[in-house]
Image (cartoon, rainbow, N blue to C red):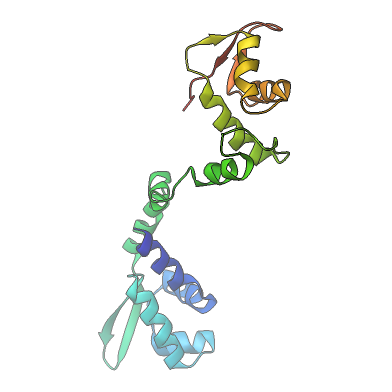
Length: 187
C-alpha cells in the first residue's frame, strides 16, 4: 500500500503530467495531439505517458499509425479509496507512536526516573505528564498528601505537576484538597 501511494504521487508530481491527466479526463488524445497542446516534444510526452501508465492512470490503444491514450477512471476511483482514514492510518502502522515520548522522557529524566526539570514547552510537558501519571493506579483514589508523595519522586514542585496533570485531564480531583484519581483512557 505504501509503495503504491508513493508511486502514484511520484507519477503526478509533475505539472505536465497533471495537465495530461486533465486533458485525458476530457477525452482520449494521441501522443502528438498532447505534445501540440502542451507545447512539448513528442518524446517528452511519451516519457510522461509511460510514467502515468506505470501506475495505471493511462492506457493506450493503437488506432492506425497512432497510439491513442485514455484516462483509466477505475484507477482514479481506486486512488480515492486510498484516502480513507483507515487506509491512511495503515500507511504509518509500522511507525513507533511512543518514540517521541521516550525521547522526551530520556531528555528530561535522570537514571532514577526523577525529572531534571519540568519542560516549559507544552508538547514536551504533555509527554512528561503521560510518563508521570503511570505512577497512579487506575480506579484508585488518592488523597492530596498521597499524590504529593508520589509526585515528589519525580520533582520537588509537586503543586505544578498536580495542577498540570489535572489540567491535561490525566487526573481528576474532587473539591479543593479532596481526592484525586487517574482518568481512564477515553479512546
